[in-house]
Length: 275
Image 1 (cartoon, rainbow, N blue to C red):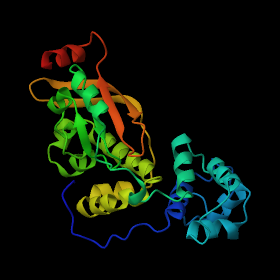
Image 2: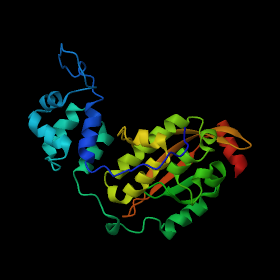
Image 3: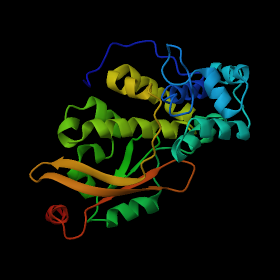
Image 4: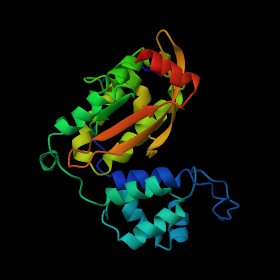
């Protein structure tokens, strides 16, 4: 399922706004949106003219947006579309970012340089698995416990590549399907503001993994800043950890992931045995 596929011509999406609007339009159930239609439908979700009506736009103008002939709609129009498409907060933020010129690689700081102070903090956190990632999900630095729990959390690895290309991933992640979906949706959320920086990596993953390509093309956007994850750890078994994520201030776009067990739980005791 995660084997590499033959290289295909993978031109970057030159109309991300239109692609995202179309993907969200196609997931809306017409009946739940109040659309009455007695004809036989040949499309999934809403038609363009139906969405335009719900958003208070002219069908011709909405068509221009979806086809990429107008790429700079006003905030009022974006708000109307977000409401009609029932976007959540993460999807709305992604929609706004698609109408803002993304940062070019030349405008960003060296993405793979972690500040010395952050490295010092990681060295002191001997009892927590924590690591820092770049926007493309390269692991840049980690605590010793993080590298012990999960090979993907070691510096030099990439979370996306491990999930889709490493045969160990389904063993490490008992909930691999959910984690794969969330990983791609999270990367897409990041790509809205850093598209030029991430486009080469996304193009590479689309060629190397059919599963990644299918998930990326679904245009789902997800920003999971907290939650739980299950890991299968050698010599211990399955461990359930909660996590929190923190943006490291600065232009690099680094994120800090910190995992922790519930106090007094069997997972807590397992981690203590490793430290």
